[in-house]
Amino acid sequence: MDKKLLTIQDISCFGQCSITVALPVISACGIETVILPSAVLSTHTAGFTGYTFRDLTGDMADIEKSWQANGLKFDAFYTGYVCENQIDPILSIMKSCAAEGAVRIVDPVMADNGKMYPGFGADFPAKMCRLCDGADYILPNLTEAAFLLNEECRLEGYDKSYIEGLVKRLHGTGAKNVVLTGVSFEPGLVGCAVSDGKKIEYDFNSRLSRSSHGTGDLFASVFAGALMRGKSALESAAIAADAVCLAIEATDEKHWYGVCFEKIIPDLVNLLK
Ligand code: PXL
Image 1 (tube, rainbow, N blue to C red):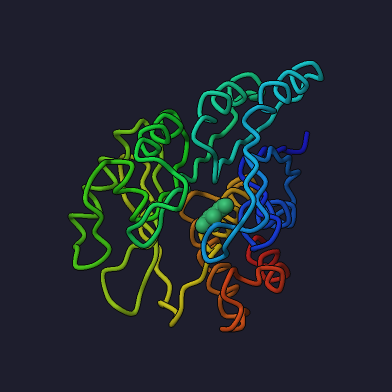
Image 2 (cartoon, rainbow, N blue to C red):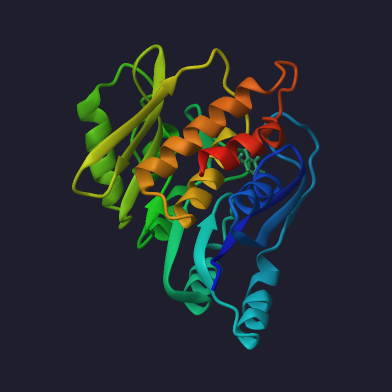
C-alpha cells in the first residue's frame, strides 16, 4: 500500500507557509498527504496586521472519531504550527490513527531569530516538549532549541561543542533523532546538524544574502516527503536544504512574506530521483 502522511498545522490562507506549502510539496514528493488544520488564519503572523485566527482545537476529537470509525491509519505524522491546547488531542490522534511503525516528525514551530512568534504563551515550549517526547524526528531551529530547553538563545559566536551539547540536550526531550537547523560555524556556510543519538552529521550550503519567511516549513515538508520516499535523515535534510536555497533564489527580493517554492517543484522532483 502506498504511504499516507498526516500533517497537522495551520492554514494561513495567504502567506506561503504551513499547509499551503506542506500539501503541494509532500504531494509532489509522491506521498499521499492528509491534512488536519490546527487553525485558520487570514495570513501568517510574521509581518501582516489584523489577521484573523480561528483555533480549531474543538474539532479535533470529532475528526479523530470520524477517522477511527472509518479505520483510517497513517504511516507518518508531521506536525508544524499548532495551538496551545492541541498537544493532547494530537498525541491521541498519533496513537489511535497510527499504522504499524508510523513515524512521528515534529517541527516545534514557535520561534525564530531569538523571539517567540506572537500569541504563544511562556509555557508553550514546555507543552511542545511533550510532543517531542517519543518523536522519531524533531526539527527545531536554534531559537526553538533554546526555548525547548529553557536556555538562553545563542545565534552566533558559538562553536561545535555548543551545538553538540544542544543536540544532546534535545535528545533529552525524548526525541529519537534531532535535526537542528540554522547551524553555522563560518560566515559563508549555514546548514543543519543531524543526530540519531549516537553520531552527529552535518550538511552545509552556501549562505544566501537574504533569509525569508516560510523556509522552515519548506525545509520540514521536503524533509518529511524525502524521508517517506526512503531517503536517510541526512539525505532528506540535504535535499530539503537544497530545495530551500533554490526557492530563495527563485524568489524576488520584493516578495517578502514567503518563498516561491512553486517554481522549484520540478527541481524537487529531480532531487528525489
Ligand atoms: O512559518 C511558520 C508559521 C506558521 N504558521 C503561522 C505563522 C508562522 C510564522 O510566523 O505565523 C501562522
